[in-house]
Amino acid sequence: MSDPVRWSDTAEDVIRGDITVAVSYVTPAGGAAVTAVAPCGIGQRDLGTVGFTTSLGFGKKLERIICDPHVALAYHAREHGYSASPAFVLAQGLAAVDLEPARERLDALTPQAERYVGKVMRGPVWDRLLREYYAERVFVDITLERVATWPDLGASGPVQVTGAAWPGPAAPQRPPKNGTGPRVDVAKAAQQVGALPHRVLAYRGADGFPVLVPVQLAGHDQAGLRLVAAPGLLPPGGRRAGLLAHAYRPQLVGLSTRTFTGWLEAGPDGVVYAPHTTRGFVAPPRKKLLLVSNGLMAKYGLWQARRQGTAARLEQLASERDTRG
Image 1 (spheres, one colour):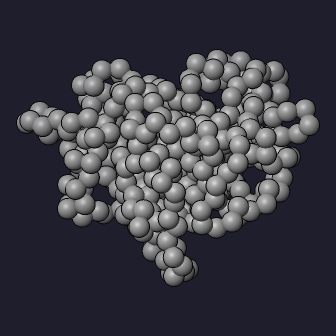
Image 2 (cartoon, rainbow, N blue to C red):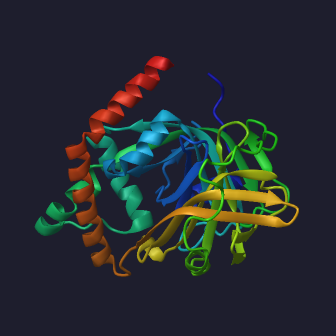
């Protein structure tokens, strides 16, 4: 077993301080999906691990992570957190999903999570409403292979890499059979992305790990969204890619998230992103309304997961992967 990846003090400050991160995982078609999660400071520097929790209601995400454990976290936003560092941190590693965490582990997370997302609500009504949201969680534990740290949130300037050396640029991918052009309203997508301050693009890197890159919106046309990234971050050519745009308030109240899958083309004339699918989520800007919403969604998601046999399917996938080695 190789020695754990031990990141810098700068990266540690960011990893412990951010209240939300972008997480990316590989899709069956060789692309990369990206969404936002609350890591709540999960991780152990001495062991070279980070992580986050999620719900069985997000079975598709968990299924893909179990099937291909290459994941990445981008610590890309300092708002309402505990770090004042201007650094952009990308952590790449191999994930393991703890589908049935011990009660002791769930209980130990509660005081830690309260620091980031606020006090846990207690009482007969809240306990019943939030039982699934608080207690029916799974952990995604990530053993890091590489931590890359740039001096600013735009990921410009020299990068410091700890762990595995940075691979060369990823080769272009074969275009999808249905074409590379936009499949959703580009003007509407531009309006949605432009209204949200934090934007991260994800693609599959040369060594199989997702790469997450901060981007800015520079306009749009019939070809797609015109994006700008720091020099050298995006490899030339076309490839499948995911895009996340989001906003949040203290304790992650008032969330607004928009995710896309699509086709990325980087060339001499700039960077164009053609969105193919999109999903959005807006949470109430009041804490109690947010908790009610989270509680009801968790109940519904868990009911669906049980009805569809999600837990059993994920356990089988994990067992099959362990058997393959």
